[in-house]
Amino acid sequence: MIGVPDVLTHVLVGYSIGTLLSLRFEAVRPVHVTLVMIGALSPDFAKIELVFPDGFVWYVLGIPFSWSPLHTLGGTVLVVCLGALVVAPEHRRRAIALIAIGAVSHHVLDILLLNVTGVSYAALWPLSSYRFPSLDLYLSSDRWPALVAGTIAAALWFVRHRGRSVAN
Image 1 (cartoon, rainbow, N blue to C red):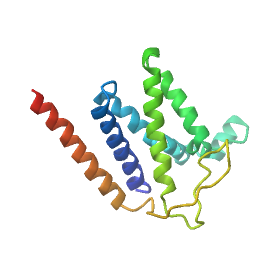
Image 2 (cartoon, one colour):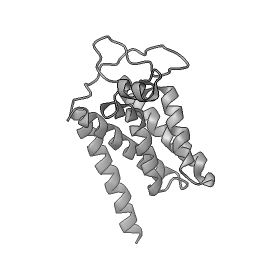
Image 3 (cartoon, rainbow, N blue to C red):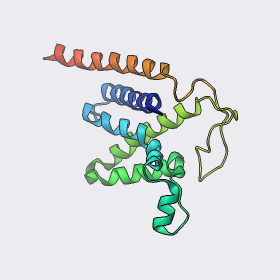
Image 4 (cartoon, helix red, strand yellow):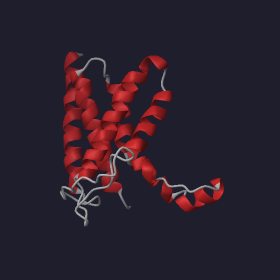
């Protein structure tokens, strides 16, 4: 179960951010929360390497290949743009914004990770290869960030659903 606490934390933080946005802005309905959650998970699409390793794709395509750029700003922009293409044109601006918000939350959380080198990954690539100082707050395998994110998500779920039942 490598990375399960990390993936769960990203999804729960995306849910919390999306729910807060839906409580604050009428244009963001509860159904849009899923877009923030997808965005929060999107940089980890690079983990597809576990199924289709870089070397395999390189062999099939016949060109050098890596999934790693998906976990950077360039990959985030690509995923946000592709994600916007699967929604109706009149909803694309909102979809782009919500997926991007989720993806930014992912990068922020990853910069907080404990890293033995003391620096994070090149999150701003291809614009910059600068590596932010790692804030060394937790490991990706730690369960406490998922517990904190889960508690916050549960509280927000309760607030949102309690408000709905009071209105009825």
